[in-house]
Length: 262
Image 1 (cartoon, one colour):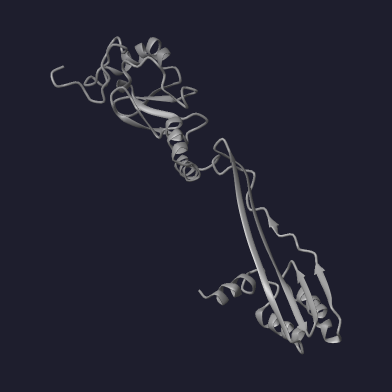
Image 2 (cartoon, rainbow, N blue to C red):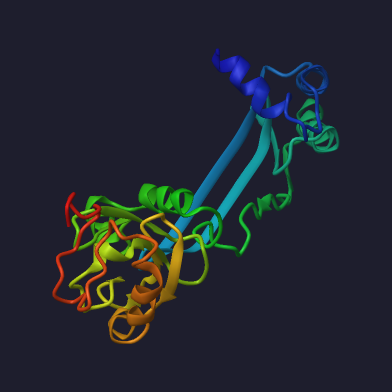
C-alpha cells in the first residue's frame, strides 16, 4: 500500500470519518486561492499501554488522536489554523482564518482538541476467565523466559505420580485444581500432592482400575488411614487382577494389573 493510500485509509475511509477527500480538497483549494504557498497537513496518532505488577495486569489504556493544520502564505503574511478533529466544519473554520491573508491580515485560530481516549478494556482480567490453556497461553505471552519457568513450577500442567505416570492437572473444574489418578498409582505416597510451592492442595479424584471415581479427597494421608479399608473391601472382588494391599503405604505404586499367576 502506498503512502497516499495509507493516508487516505487513516483519514477519509474510516467508518467514523467526518470528511471525505473531495470535500477536503475543495475547501483547501478555496482557502489557498490567490496565495503564494500553502499546505494542509494531517496528523493521526495511536498509543496503547499495559502496566503489570507481580505478573498481573493492573491497567491497560488505548488512545487515538487525529487533527490537521492549514497554512497559507502571501508575500510576508502567513495564516495558520489547526484543529484536533478532521471534520468539514473544522476545516471550514480553518479555511476562513487562513484566507484572511488575502486581505493583508495575519491570524491564528485554534479549535480545542476533541477527546478521543477510548476505553477498550474492561476491569475484568483476561487471566480470570476462560479455559486454563487459553489463560496460560495469554500469561505466557506476557512473561519473559525466567518468569515463564517460574510459572511452570508454580502451576504445572502435569504432575508425575509415584507410579511414574505423568498426569494432567485440571484447572477448570472449580476453585481448586484437580488431579484424577488411579488409586494404585499413589501407593506409598504419604504427603498430599500440592502446587504453588506447597500452598495449594490438589483435589484428588481417586479412580478405580476402570477409571471410575472412587473417592474425592484433599487429605490423602487421612484416606489411607480411614476410608481405604472400606474401598479395598468393596473393590478387590470386582477388580481381582489389580493390587489391593492391606497396607497401601508399603506397597509399590503401579499403573498396571498384577502379573499373571498372582
